Image 1: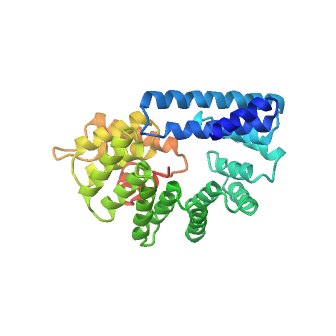
Image 2 (image 1 turned 180 degrees about the horizontal axis):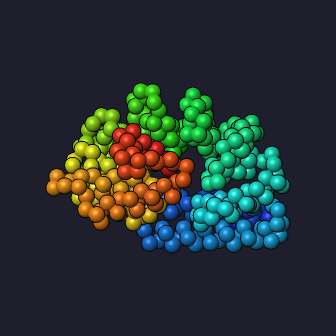
Image 3 (image 1 turned 60 degrees about the vertical axis):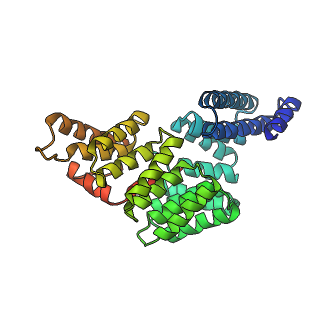
Length: 347
């Protein structure tokens, strides 16, 4: 019904860039929702999602032909190049232009702040813009979620991050993503907050039983905190039944195979699948490199496996240059022992 209303508005005002930009935004939301709906028939779901995305891009191009500096059209096209057809540099350029035109529009300010969290990183600029966006619209749940991520991950301010996510949940209590992200915050806290993490993961799954990131991270919690490999394995299999190509789940399930099941062949198959899905998946590059470098009972790793381990590690460091790795392969065991894999599935 909402799409129909946007369509009728566009038919009545085909030269109005605001109407076109809003219709495009609705189409983008529908395309993303359909793309992520695992219950739909795979072929139809992906084809219709792609068609909606193309229609959105056509509308945005048309809106910007009418008004080259229309802020909402610029913002929505940036969102298109962030979530649908990733071109990070172009998205940042579009958001920068939108900011020049509408420097006090809360959605645009929050979007540009989020873009500054990408490479090249600008933490000071992002924090300043998130602060402004929070003042402009303190109930924007996406802004609160991303602001919380910045406060915890980059600034180490757990209490403020928790407050932002709790406020977002107060605004939208039935949002599975918000519960899942707050749970990840608790899961990765240095404080003993695993109980709170489990509660919010389970709440996310009450809202959306098929929310794969929550299933994956709840599995990791069962593995590393409760030391319940059986339940962890069941949850990983449940996640993969819903989304067979979920790289985070494949990697974390591989970690379980190494850490508890001592099934190195099974782990290697899972790490390979994760890297087939996403060749730049940093945790899988690290974990697979660590596995290859481990010494089997009949001696050390073969030269070929050692060479591959080093290649994978270099790819991981290249993909995330901010990670300083010393003593190369020796560091990987520390990475596995931190439980940091829980941060993978942020939705």
